[in-house]
Length: 180
Image 1 (cartoon, rainbow, N blue to C red):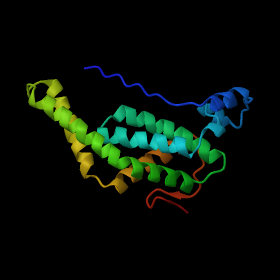
Image 2 (cartoon, rainbow, N blue to C red; image 1 turned 180 degrees about the horizontal axis):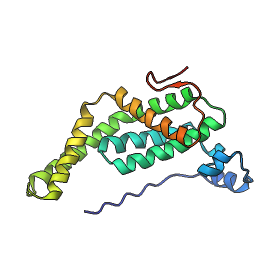
Image 3 (cartoon, helix red, strand yellow; image 1 turned 45 degrees about the horizontal axis):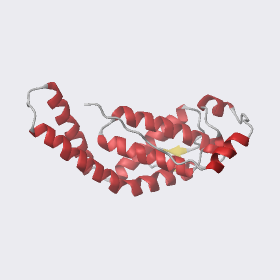
Image 4 (cartoon, rainbow, N blue to C red; image 1 turned 90 degrees about the vertical axis):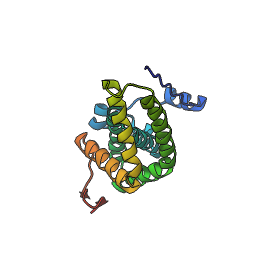
């Protein structure tokens, strides 16, 4: 089965004009490395990426989750580079994931129902059915995981990747999830 997902984003004419008129300036080597302009990274972008990461994680889509965490880490690294704090990043991720959690649960429940229907209509001894069953079990397991644990995992994954990409986290305590 092939599934094509198309995501449409609204871009206003003023946004396009601003990006066209603004001269490109290299801020630092981190910006060059990541290919992200600091003024295009903001809290809504971080929140959007965190929400997507939550959904991919709970759906058991590992490759998509890893890719989204990489994008989120890039955005956070730039956001930290331009003078914001790790606490700002953590608050943005927490709030977006808390807001997205109910939608993600509904999406997972729907996916489980569709996959369960497919399982009921297929031969249990095929590799495809075994893979489908594994996907259902992964999604069901995330229904039981407390949101705080998921948020902590996503923040840890993001900050570790951001640190690898050159972000300065300062004295951050990963065990207690706070800046020292």
